[in-house]
Length: 155
Image (cartoon, rainbow, N blue to C red; front, side, top):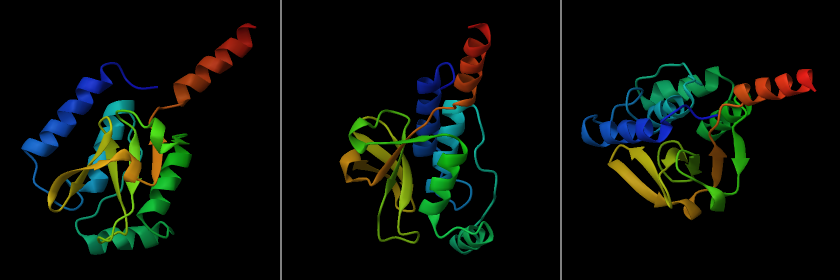
């Protein structure tokens, strides 16, 4: 479930990132941008590790016994019940993975309509959703699960 007024809160995160924050690994990069968006949309922190460079980021991947950024994203999605959906059904606030040739072999961004916004070292970039490889619907399922338990108990 998305928090109340998630769309306007997400817009503020995007605006702040575009207008005020400079790119910095571990503080304002592709991953932290997406994590801020997820927390803004759901009210839940889904990943709480720190890094300050590509080298530290890659060391963190190894420490977590993951293969790469995509492997971590798949793990976080599974842990948080973020459903993988068809790219063609991506909507504002969903998270998309784009395969590239940069430092991580891929990057994460947030859907803003028919495009996804990525925070790269070169600045914010838009890529058409259909160029991305994976999409996750960002909703926090815990509240829905509690609601389903309540229905079961009262039936």
